[in-house]
Length: 290
Image 1 (cartoon, rainbow, N blue to C red):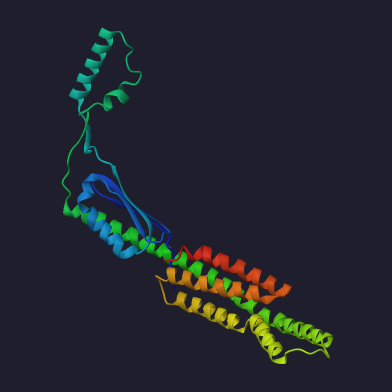
Image 2: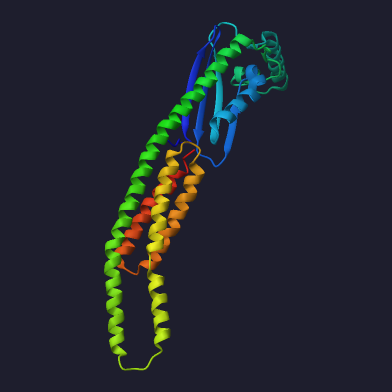
């Protein structure tokens, strides 16, 4: 069963004085592109979190965030009332002395001044981190479950598209026989026109063999059929097959293109166009396979 690269996980952990939310988003990417946003209180654990994400998520553009909402009276960020008042008095005195307008929004102005807002450095306790770490692991599990569900839908889509190409390939045989009969008739007609004339029969035979081989599509049909079967068996091998499925889809495209260039028949070319349409939908979605 294949997995999708896209996924989402979100877990909220309740602590005595805060609520911690862990959120992970994953999108498709050729490599693992990881970005993290972690509050200062948990910053010392950042490498541990990154290693956990690297080991479990393999590939994709990963956005990892931890949000903290303080629900008690004690919060790590405090306003320094003494500094706040001193700045207020100084600004007011300067404005009067220089006869300039006072700020229209005192709070916005004063809260930007140095040392008005201070953050207490908190020590991370092991019991708290254990709760947060469990939330991180649960969010990862949710994301992986999401990937599995998305992967199942992708696999059904691929099975349908591959089945459609296989059906279209079987329809080629009907027109192929018709095409050969038309080619034979055209050759016989041309032979009748040169009847009685002297020509190099060996050279003529060589040209005929070359012409027939050039139009023969049996090899392309067999190779395309093998690629279709290989695509299905690769999906069934499990996760981590995205790049391989992309390579197989490219090979399928080569055979379909060659089939179209050799077809020399209007109905066969229509079938080839339909095959290309099905294959493009496979190529578009295979980029999202882990």
